[in-house]
Length: 432
Image 1 (tube, rainbow, N blue to C red):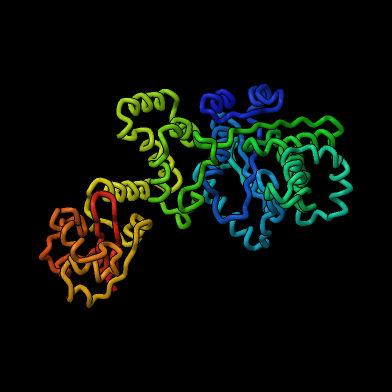
Image 2: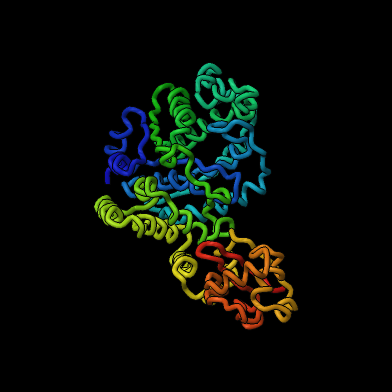
């Protein structure tokens, strides 16, 4: 597989230093790396595009390195930010690194072969590197003028109160020098000749290639390659849902929510997303696009995308559970098949109302859906009766009747009632 050609047709390629393509073709296997920020316990959808760069590097017969920035994560990268981040202690960073390593293992083959993936941590070589030693051996090779010419630095230094920027501390200003030294260290010790990343990392990456050249008296040659930032068709950043960041850790974003995020991708976005986030070949993707064009309402592309990514991130069983939950909610399936965690997950965004057990014995369903639920579902018994008589109310997927007693409604998991008002309004009643 030709790496550059593969990235181009998938719409993932952004830029590369002159000679990178030839270097990849003539020196296989080369070693290339990408840095990951460990300031959160999990990677997220925004990281997934850069993970896929490493996946394609390995598929093309090269060796991928994932650098977890235990040292630089204590400082923070100014690229794309308007303010300085909070600093984490070493213990928190180590915990985060362990979680990130486990996530990367789902995408990359870790083995001892020439193309086997490896995780490195820059804290391991920075922890004993003294400040004065760093200035003498590294800092003298780059001028302040060179470092200030980077766009990420210029944006922050030129910031003002109107733009919301807070300026740039010396701590963050030093980040590009530290990241540049990472590249030099990997070049010297692991033969790493390529650094990759998202397009907003171009300045930091090329600092590394320049530092290698200067610290080897012009003899060292290293290369840079960047991928496209993933944005929506309207230009906004991709990777956040209505509830916030979409994480790869199932305890932070459940497999169901993760699956739904991709399933709900807009038609304008999904052709690009399926190229970036899956390994489906070009012919198969084009066939899916043709099928999708014939019946967009079936969401063929979204289903293929959601299945592929959810399975790789969370496993086959989690995908099947997410699919089953989706079919229950949107396809009229049996709610009794859901366990409590999935039930609460599926209805996480709907109003939840607690009702005492004693209220069920005292009310019919009309009273339950009005007075007993604090008028949240229906403001009055008359309104509830009218809609129930018209067949517009279901309790746990069964049509409610005006004379039905609340105690006659079978409870899900001995505790819950899902009330549906009309076609789209859901409420979760918890009996306590």
